Length: 267
Image (tube, rainbow, N blue to C red; front, side):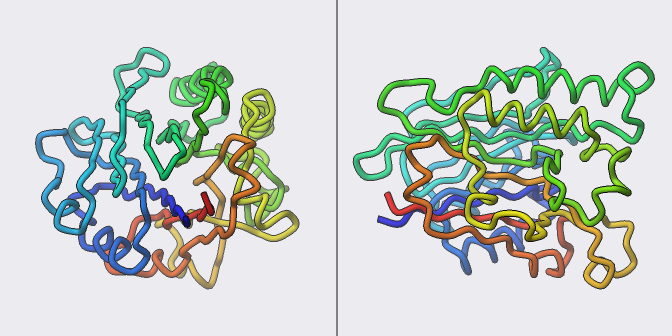
């Protein structure tokens, strides 16, 4: 059976609920993981997702900042909310889903952006980001027998040369500095993860999931970065049938600066 998971940094779920509803109607994923919901739990628009055919919703929010939510057609067995760096931020949510006969642990993550200055000694935001990534090194793709894993989210790092519009010009720009990219590649390697986007669309193809609001014409300039990711445990990789980045969503009404990313597995 096909199983489609989508991830999207929505940059305020209440403000951009109409385009989330559009995504659900047009793409009909089985699971949608949202980041930067910017919404406390009690104000999350649950009814809208139930009406769209998604009866199972888990949220980890806070007022005005951060926040993640996972919306599913499939019931889930348990929830986990990990407090990375002991900051009290709502940046992680994990659920165990039953998809047919398979159990899949879905991690939904929003990694700190890191500010503008790539020096942890003068920029506390960048220091926070590096500590967060260091903690992610402990995440394993196969952490429980009989349970597959998927990790998605806005990880705020474009790790490969062709994940950015200009590798040379962005080497000193937060999200593509060597200390970040090397750490992310180590997380993937040490954790036994598979980068499904790059497994399906290998380099040197350019892949972007984010275009800055600062660009007057983001489409023409096309100065993008691949900040949003879908990884899996090795057992799921052979079942990957499709990956899509919905670039057109960057031009929808009142858009996020990120676009939805979808992966389909035949499980």
